Image 1 (cartoon, rainbow, N blue to C red):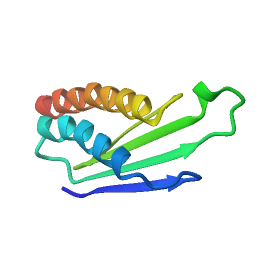
Image 2: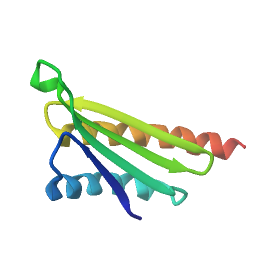
Image 3: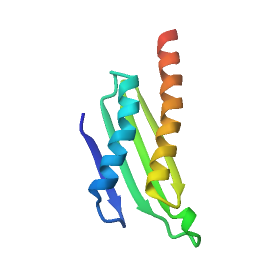
Image 4: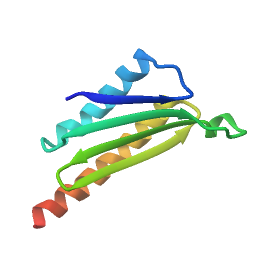
Length: 100
């Protein structure tokens, strides 16, 4: 599956995309129903460096869109936190789908 990347006020980075792809693979392994993944990176105007690097990940599923965003001092930390949040959301989605 292709992952769409967007960069806002950030230069594109193959290293960052490879890191993100490895993290997103954990999500993709948990469900074969995922139809799309969008990732964006942006730098906020915050005063402190720890509040600047934002990563957002949107996962498309039939009838549902999961989204998580995290802000840290490094994009890799933001991606890791967002993917962890998405794994929790995906488990809730799967439990809800199993009940219906």
